[in-house]
Amino acid sequence: MDYYHQLKKSQLNFQVIIPFLKFNQELEKELLVKKIKIFLKTEKLFIISPTDETIIWAQDHWRDCHSALPSKELQQTLKDLNIFAYHYKTEKNKAVESLLGRLKHIPEKRIKFPVTKKFNFKYYTWTTYEDVVIYSLSPLKTYPVGWHEFDEDKDFPPNRAYLKLWEVFTTQDLKIKPDDCVIEIGAAPGGWSWVLSQYFKKVYTFDRADLAPQVKKIKNIEHHIGDAFKINPDEFTDCTWFFSDLICTPEKIHETIEFWLAHSRVKNFVCTIKFKGDTPFEVIDKLLKIPDSKIVRLYHNKNEVTWISSPKVT
Image (cartoon, rainbow, N blue to C red):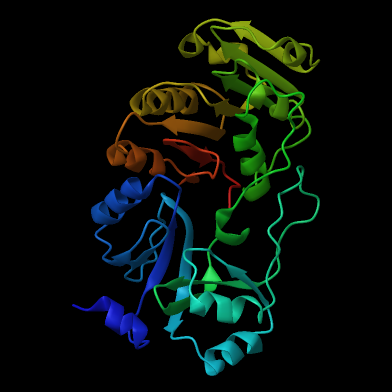
């Protein structure tokens, strides 16, 4: 089937997936597992059959997609939308050059944390596949193409892991109360601990190693050196949240989550699920069966995803 010809003639019913940089193979395997047809693909985009499925390895998922050859009519159609455009760069060609200077584009800016005013205005996205212009009226991500780059703090945090939590708190609607307390495992050297200390009344951290000195001095952090898998929940009955960026197998963190659900007051979780090689979809499926949970692949994740569970998660 000549899908490119159909795309060119505006005859293809399709959606677009933007892959995370260097994780095209993971995306392709996920689409295969979920039996979603790939019409066309490049290093920077996948053109797929329409689906309502959540695609974990998608940096962005464009729905309500249209295609057309460059023309004055297309230019006018896009102008008449009267909303900002976001151009996803794939390749330089005449189609790009003819539109770049004629449409209102969203400026690409780093996110300043904490976000005091949410990015919530309507926009559309566009790109090109060879000489065909593709545009979407319903991109999934609030921030265009899931580009979650922050103005980084290069002075205080002991590592860059804190960016994962900045992204979680920016993109997920977590309902943390002023009196909430949290357990964090795999805490050292303290990038997450530092962020959590700004949101929780008390942060109990666990690791076999110590925290960085500047983090350990934070008053509402209480660090415990030891085995994170041997914590007694009865000693932390004030905790209703559990965070983990611990390096362990997906099976082990799943077992740990189930233990805390069964033996503690904890009902809210944010846990990194780290992989060695291929995505273990059987573990992913087990985690997603836990009520009020979802899995996201953060912009700042590596070969890993983030599992979030909270009765008030949206």
